[in-house]
Amino acid sequence: MTVRIDDMDRKILSQLQEDASQSLDEIARKVGSSKTPVWNRIRKMKEAGLIGRQTVLLDPEALGLEACFFVLIRTSEHEADWQNRFLNALRARPEVLEAHRLAGDIDYILKVRVPNARAYDAFYQALISEVKIHNVTALLSMEEIKSTTLLPL
Image (cartoon, rainbow, N blue to C red; front, side):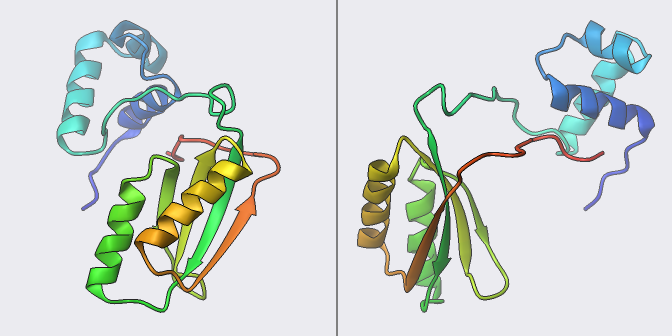
């Protein structure tokens, strides 16, 4: 279901995406409105599900998570039981930042953050001990060129 938003909502959402810690006064000033209408719009967008939880972005390298792997997974298993075990294994692993089910030759792609290759191997060994996987290819990201949480509004 698509929620209708206008230009003012887009301006508010852009400000929140850029820095959700801004005060209502700051946001209102930047979007050319006053505090109460901005608050009402934010509340309505939260109720409509446009705005989810608010978090803080951390620097993974500063925290020692220097290795980013993209893990391509092919499976020969497509039963509901296997899929549930696989999804539960992924959800239980904090190293998995993203997981997507794909169309095409690859069934799943994971974005995994770990300190180093040895930590990736421990992650890999634990994963394959929990669930049968036909083929795994791990690609080490040499350089992050672009990473954003900002959606194009």
